[in-house]
Image 1 (cartoon, rainbow, N blue to C red):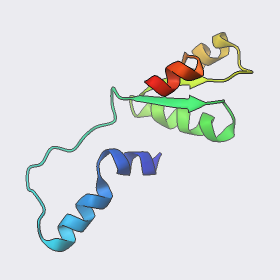
Image 2 (image 1 turned 120 degrees about the horizontal axis):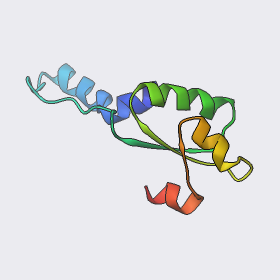
Image 3 (image 1 turned 30 degrees about the horizontal axis):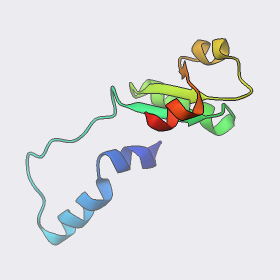
Length: 88
């Protein structure tokens, strides 16, 4: 989850800008809230990421060929097929 946040906020590029002395004061920082995260399956790792994503205000899509859609909905995600997950 931390890597996702770093990627969305372009943390690594900003770190380089700070080191070069070209930091832009007042630049807006992208937020995760309202963005969409797609998860494949619902194992231990994806369940942990899913909980963090819900806490961060992300919309969660989930594909799991062996998971009932009602179980995905109960977990707070939207069940989708793999093609839709990759499109989003």
